[in-house]
Every structure is written in C-alpha cells, then in structure tokens.
Image (cartoon, rainbow, N blue to C red; front, side, top):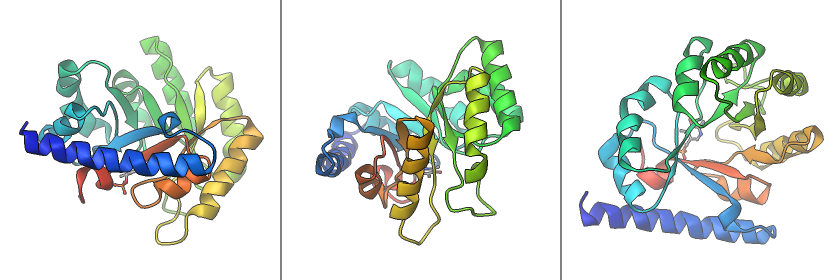
Amino acid sequence: MTTDSIEAAAARLSDIRDNIDRAASLTGRRGADINLIAISKTHEAPAIQPLIDAGQRVFGENRVQEAQGKWPALRDATPGIVLHLVGQLQSNKADDAVALFDVIHSLDRPSLLTALAKAMDKADRRIPCFIQVNIGAEAQKGGCPIADTPALIAAARAADVPVAGLMCVPPADVEPAPYFALLAKIAREEGLDRLSMGMSGDYETAIMLGATDIRVGAALFGAR
Ligand SMILES: *Cc1c(COP(=O)(O)O)cnc(C)c1O
C-alpha cells in the first residue's frame, strides 16, 4: 500500500471517530464504546487494506459469496479481524455464513433461525445475531415485522442462538430519528442492550438515540 492511501484512510477514520466521540458525549457515553463497523461491500482488497493498516479491525459485508472471495486472505494477513454480515441471508447460505462471520445482523424470520441454529450446532460455534426489524414496515425490505419481533427473539433464545440486539435500516429519504427511537424502545422492552443502527448519512443521529454498533461504508471508503 502506498503511504498516501494509508494516510487518506487514517484521516477518514479519524474524522469519523471524532464525530462518534462528539455524538456519544452529547448523551453521556464514550465514543470508545461505539463499535464502528466498516462496510466494505463492493470494495476489493486494495481499497480495504489501507483501512486495516490505519488500525480498523471490524468490517462488514452484505453478501456471503463476495465476502468468501476476499476475506480469508485479508484475515490471514492480519490477526484480530472481526467480520459482520449485514445483508439479507438466504437459509441455504447459513452454513457458509456461520463459518465465515463473527456476527450476523440480519436474522429476521423463523426459517432462517432454524437454519442458523442447525448451522451453529454443526459447526459447534455460537455466533451473536442481531434481529433485523422492518422498522418502517416497508413491503420490499428485509426485517421482521415489529409485531412478530418479540416471538422471534424468544424463539432465538429458546434455540440457544445468542441474540446480540436489534438492527434496522430505516426508510430512505425521510428523517430517520423516529425509527431509531422506535427500535431503541423495542430493544428496551425486550431487555436487549445493543442497537445496530446508523449508516454514513445518519450515524451521529443514531448514536444520540442509543446506537452501539454503527455500519459505515461510503464515508470510510468513498462513494460506491
Ligand atoms: C451498505 C450498507 C451500509 C453502509 O451504508 P453507507 O451508506 O455506505 O454507509 C450499512 N448497512 C447495511 C445493511 C448496508 O447494506
């Protein structure tokens, strides 16, 4: 990697960390307690490596197959990488997902829960899963309907699938704050303390409303 690209990555990372610190301190939290997940989907190793060199260790991908293509080599080169799956997951990819990822953000239906529980049993590896909630009740979007969320959480707990918290992607092009606040309320009611919410355009708002895990792509890598 050129020194230039590492310095540019370090500068973007440091800007975002400053914004995280500011948003967290406004609600009496510490920026260091916010988990910044660098969403590297569509980017290849030469774009990812400078961020690793700049110190970032937590990454996210939205497709199992794409992640299988690039992460094994990147991981071999740098110990301590933590990989999150943030995209919709088909049940027939559960084994692959459990083998590759450390955290899954898109558990959103009973059939996928069954597949993940089976995959975790087979691999003898329990992976924390966020329950993705369809917070805007959008027909075309992944996520569990709000009304079905408590039952899915209970079923996951019963199946010994670790529930990390709740995740959402609010509707595009409208103010996201009410959706973040609603996800936080559901999490409180369910006794869950992690919230995966906030992307490049709205992570500061999400943090002020309780996000613990933010998923930032474009602001770290440049526009896709
Ligand atoms: C792509 C993606 C992100 C990151 O979005 P940016 O706007 O690039 O920060 C976050 N979450 C999910 C589920 C995504 O698919």
